[in-house]
Image (cartoon, rainbow, N blue to C red; front, side, top):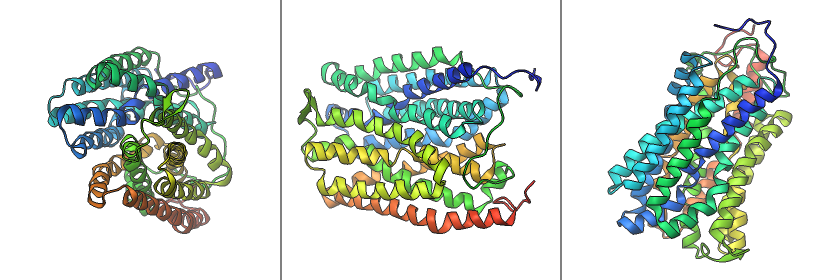
Amino acid sequence: MIANRSNPAPSNSYRWMQLIIGVVCMAMIANLQYGWTYFVSPMAKANSWDVAGIQVAFSIFVALETWLTPLEGWIVDSLGPQRGPKLMVAAGGIFVAIGWIINAKATSLEMLYLGAVVSGVGAGGIYATCVGNAVKWFPDRRGLAVGLTAAGFGAGAAVTVIPIQIMISSIGYADTFFWFALLQGGIIFVLAWLLRSPQSGEVPSGVAVKVLQSKTSSTPAQMLSSPVFWLLYLMFVLVSASGLMVTAQIALIAKDYGVAQSVILFGATTLIVSGVIDNLANGGARPFFGWVSDHIGREYTMAIAFASGGLAYWLLGAAGTTPWTFVISAALIFFTWGEIFSLFPSTCTDMFGPKYATTNASLLYTAKGLSALAVPLANILKDYTGNWHAVFAVAAVMNFGVVALALFVVRPMRISINASGKNPVGQPAE
């Protein structure tokens, strides 16, 4: 039964509990993407698999983790606020556990790809549900809530960087996959039963922010017919692809630069220190740039972040060949890439309104899946040129291109749309 609109809203502590549970669940799936790089070389060595072939599994995971989120979000909404989040996240926990167990037992690339499919489906359901729940529980602090939730996915792997590498060295990559599968999947499954979405009248109304916003809401079908959406989609693909091409290969880059095993801090190697700092930078970027964009606007924030990202790729190629310059350059890349997961959903909701925000943002999020197809291409380009410089150059150009689109195409279009009193699909403002 739908709650009466006169019902008092739950306390802030209850809303924050829901948010924290979502953040923890997101942190439990972070290793599926950001811990992957530490398994690549051991798998290649143990099985005589080609690295580019292994990275196809990464692309499959990212594609499934993103492309199915609109469907998974729709299922959650259809099941209702009480059952939807619980069942989807619980099922997701089971799927991500099975996926990594398949990885542990894989004796062929095809079996590894199957593991990527299963874990990708599970991670997508968890991601869509937790972000959707944050949007629903915090209409008055949506940017902060979504940024913190996305930060769980971006920074969650930081605390397991050292344990994963120690376990791989001591018991092998297969057993590491297996035990982390049980740990991560188990925690998600237990926490899932505490989740729910708010019912009508349970949350405060949203507050205005200092950005351009549509006065009407567009349905998913209407949004997909808008040229502005596809421009935003292209921008998301370009920035996401540049980041994935490097973040998925960071351990390989460190190895090729000859700095991976250099001891630099309290007995920790360059790769370990970089792994911790990179994940913290990636996670911290999401609420930070989301907060900045609430004050100076989405496009100006994109320009600052992505221009800095382009310079970071250049810096890694030009000066990242010593342990500490590698750590610093890689951290800058992660910090100027992770914010796409707060900036683009916020911009999408600004353009197309809040009513269908969960589904619309999930449709935009599928751009990440498309961008993942560029990861194996980075290995091919590196093998063709003999070094990583061409990959960094392509990534930098992608970022600078998005800066130009944000400032000189998207922002003028949005100003014009707002001045016309219509939304991006030509509907008059209500």
